[in-house]
Every structure is written in structure tokens, then in C-alpha cells.
Figure 1: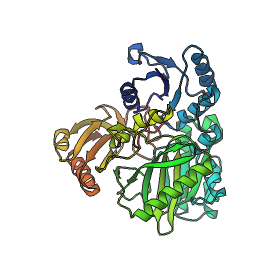
Figure 2: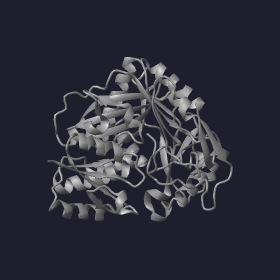
Figure 3: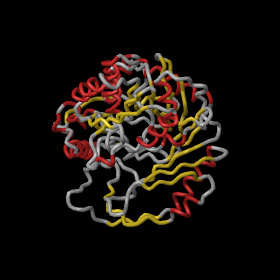
Figure 4: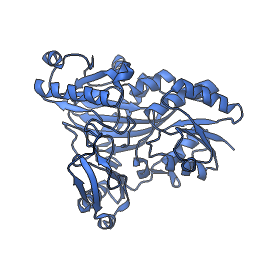
Length: 428
């Protein structure tokens, strides 16, 4: 029976979906992650790893394979995708080049590689957090976007429309990197990317690479305008309502981007903007869609995205990569303001909205809420299906209006606006 090593950061939402997919495929699964405080909280086949130390993790897994052969390694986020590539290289499995996955994780390096191959990306420049933002502001065009190099889920991403806003945004991102402990580690943790703001509609593409060939699995519209100053994503709906020729251009642009990065195997998740000049690459990640958003996708005879990824990694039969034809969507429930969540009301009424398939509140009463740009967490997720994309979007908005969140004003001691729980993404 094939064995899969699943690399899971402690804050990941993806464990349940991947473990269920492995059960359906009758696979042996070893979960590689940090040890839980309680042994009973860990899966039966568990390998304790320090995922913050990629080299040590690689050595530990290679030793593990001497008695437990591994046939596929799956990383579920940007960081573990790099480690998965390292391990796969070490034990001789099909994999992306480590430098390609690492480049996909670093926003500046990604833009360098894409620019060299004439892939449309925003104009950009990199600065140290120690630089004087008032001096930088004199030499850049507005509006612009300020962002960390290695965070995800729009954490730390801020639009600035003039010099004064830029100084505030730059200093805010620098404080965030310091608060997360990333600045102390040096390198990319002490750097900020400044790039031009690209107007237009934003979309997300889910794809699968085999020997360098990209197959588009789904294209999501993001119907809410994402114009800043922060970029909180809320609704994803598939299939896209964009014209066929625009969708084809998005797919072609993404394929060109993955070739420029050197990615060849496994899932990819792209974020793009589309305007009258065509599609522009914002991000290409060497992983699948994050959070609980994968639950919107079903393939062939009811395959989940996770089952499809496992089948592909193990070179098992894939009868169909076609997504089910019924439109689907997800809403990441936004945090309206900072404070302590006291109560959630209206859940029963929200679930009663026609088309709503699932509602998960992922924050418990008593827990602190930190909105973007410092936060990475959402209040929860809703999944809907319907006969048209418009119907799906309407159901998500109607259900959201029925939810009531009671939030106190004060954060507890030790929790500040610059306190992302983790640099790992919890959104799509």
C-alpha cells in the first residue's frame, strides 16, 4: 500500500480533507508536523518534525524512509511546499526544483523571474525595513502597494495613494515583520516590496502540472472589488463569468508564469488581475488553494481536490480532471473590527438560505480578532452551490447578512494589531 507523507503546519485547515482523501484511496499516511501538546491529539502515524528547520526536517524524513518507504510528499502551504520539494529530491520522487518552489514563495524573486520572461507583472522595487520611507516616497509613482516578501493571505498588504500614506504603510509593514519575529531572522524577513497598483478584476486559478504542462482545474471570480487600502478577500465563485477569450488569456498567462518559475509538478494556485491590457500575475504558489476553499471543488465521479492531488502525486489513474458543472462558491467571513468575539448569532437562519451547503465558524467566543492588514484569520467559511454563479453569490451574501457577530472593543493584554497568529495562510 503506498505511503504518503503529509507535511502540515500546526495552524493548517487542510488536515481533515487530505486525511479523508487518503482514507478513500486506502493509502498509508504519515503526518509530519510539530508534536501536539497532547499525544491523543496526534494522528496514529505521526512523525514529529520541526518544520521551521527545513534541513533538519529533510534529514529526519530521509532516516524515516529507511524503514518506512514514502511514495509521495505533499506540502499544503508555501513553506511546506519548499520542504516537500527538498525531501522529494533527496529520496528520488517526481518533484519541482527546490529553487523554483522557493522563488514562488518570495514575491520579489518571483517578479524577477517573471519579468525576465516578459510575463506581465507590476513594476516593483525591494527595500530594507531600515530604509527611510520619506526618501523612498519621493521616487515612486502612486498609487502603489506595500507588502512583505514572504507572508500570505493579504497579511501586511497595503495600498498607498500619496507620500503620506506610503510612509504610514511602510512603517506599519515593518512593525508587523518585527512583531512576527521575521525581521530578527534577517533576509526576506527584513525586506518590503513596493509595486505599482494594478487596477482591474481579480481572479484565482487552480491548476495541476504534469511534466510542465498546466491543466486548469477551476477559475474563480472574486466579485468584490479589491482596491484597498487593504485587500481582504471574501467571495470566490466558479465557474468564472468572464468571456471565454479572457479566460483563455488568463490560463495562457499562468502557464507562461509557471514555466518562467521552473515549476513542473503538482498543484499551483495563481492570483491575477485582469484589465483592458490583459491579465497580470500577482502571485503563483506551488500549492493548492488554501483554507477550506477546496471544498467548493469536485471532479469526475465526486473526487475532492485533495484526492485528485494525491492520485496525481502517486501517478494513479485520473479518469477525469473536469470540475463538476454546477456552480459553487465560498465566502471567507471577514473580521469587521479588532476586539474579542463574544457571541455569534443567526447561524441557523444563515444555513437555511437556499444554496448554502456548509457554514463553519472557526473562531470561538472569547478569542481575539485581528483584522487585516495585520491578521491572517477569518471568522469562518461558507460554501454554496446553485444553478448559476449569480445564484451562488447571492446565496452567500444573503446568508452573511443573517449572521450577527458580537465583538467587544478591547483586545486582551499581549495581543496587538500587529499580531498575525502565524505567517501561514488561513484564507484561500
